[in-house]
Structures are given as C-alpha cells and as structure tokens.
Length: 304
Image 1: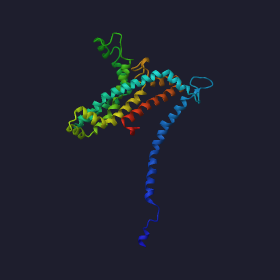
Image 2: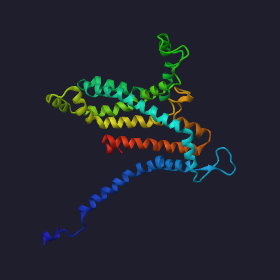
Image 3: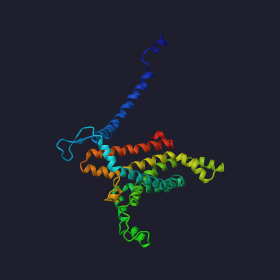
Image 4: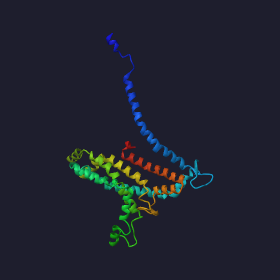
C-alpha cells in the first residue's frame, strides 16, 4: 500500500514542464514582436498603401486619398529607371572595393595578429574608430579633401592627370569612394569575426599535403570565412543602395550622380508621397532579389 501511494495517478508533469517553458518563451518574445510590428510591419503596410494613393478631390498639394493607382509604379520606373541602374552600379562597385580592402585587413587582424592580443585590440579599435565621428562629418571631410582647391586635385593637376578645369567632387569617383570608405567597417568586422575563429591547424594540414599558399586560401581559408564574407557583403550592399548622403549634391555628388535614395528624399519633400513610396517599394524589391540570389549561390541560406 505504501508503494501504491506513490503510484503515477496524478497529472503527467513531464508534459506540463515543456508547455510552461514554451509559454515563458512566448512571453519573452512578446516585447520583440511588438517592437517589430510597431517599427517594421506597420510602417511597411503604410508605405504600401501610400504607394497606391491618388490625388484628392481638391487637387491640393500633398492631398491624397486611398485608391489602387498602380500607375504610380509605372511612373516611377519610367522616370527613374536609369537612376535605379546607377544606384546598383555604384553600390556593387563600392561593395567589391570594400571587400578587396577589408579581407586582407581582417585577415591581418584576425590571423596574423592573433599572437599579439594587445596589437590586435588596438588595430580593431582603429577599424571602428570612424564610428566615433558622425557619418555626415566624415563625408564632409572627404568633400573638403577632394575640393577643387584641395590638395588632391591640386596634386593631380600638377602632374597632368587632371586638366586645369577638371574636378573630382560631384563625380561618380567621389560618390563610390565615399560609399566604400563609409561602409568598410561593416565589411571588415564580420570577416574578422569569421577569421578570428579560424582553426589554423586546417591550414597547417593543407601545407603538410603540399598545398601552396593559393590553394590553401581558395580551398581552406576562403570557404571557412565565407559566412563572414556573405554577412559583410549584405551589410555593405544594402545600406549603400539606400544611401542618399554621399550622392547628394550637398556632399560628394551632383545632379549627374543622383541615386534612388536622393529621389525618395526629393519626392517626399516635394509632397509627391505616392511616387516616393512607389520608388521605395521598388528599391526594396530590387535589393531583395539579388540578395536572395547571392545568399543562395554562396550556400548560406541560413542567413535569410
């Protein structure tokens, strides 16, 4: 009878414990879900609805009513198709340049300086040091460096690379250079995070099997650091595509270097809200398609 008192006649506690844990997990997730709904889902829905609006009955500036005016999208594509191509051209070139600069830098910090923790930390601080200064101030500093009377233009004119009437500010060169410079930390840090965890015994094993430096890089180091490369590429390409500071005529660009972000900014402040919203939606779709293709091609679908 004593053993019968401990018989399993009550509720199944083994099933209740995981259920309680799942409730706790949902409660912990609730603030994050509400934050995403308020800051991402709601603005996205508002943006989509705005992109289909049409002018109100009084035809006053900035007055629009809810409708399904899909012609806003055709108008956006017809008027700004060339600017879309320019935007992705500038962003792609800046991303490639940032990768070419950042990978050797990240390798130097994450692998070469691994035996010197102090120097590794100091070098890493130098990489993130630009974040201590405002994005606008950094871009304005580049504008001053490449000014018509600045040292760079004067030196290039003195050696004959630039003519007396040539200039750099307001050209595609300075816009791409500005994009590359401002987003290099976004490329360097993810690659560093991958290379810093690289097990060098794999590289040594490749050397023992008579693999040369190039083979060890292509077959061992690059594949193991590919998640960092993919993350850095996305973190650079996506914000560069939506950037409107570097290409602005108030900073490094001109009317001939206008990007999609500048169009959205100008159309919004001119009260053309539906077309501005349509350009934003098209830019999001145009960014999402190559990003998905790139991630799928690189074999890192788990990043999506």
